[in-house]
Image 1 (cartoon, rainbow, N blue to C red):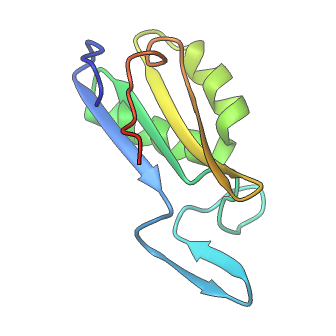
Image 2 (image 1 turned 180 degrees about the vertical axis):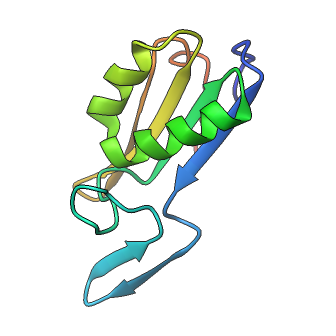
Length: 109
């Protein structure tokens, strides 16, 4: 459940829907421009912004940047929030910007 954060658009970029695995490596469609290979630092990045275009562009960039750099970057942008999921040693973890933290409540299994 997510409380209203007052921004009109959101977009999510993730590798969990369209991917395949080969020789223990996960391949998907979001490429890291520095390597030319699939970005590996995130599982999904959701960004809230004032327009759908901004949210989409920022979500893809945040996905590639990974949770640490992306959260720092998004925090510096006005009226923009983010939630990023990533794998840490086989466990699903997340990081959120200050405007989202505390407003998202995950159901317990």
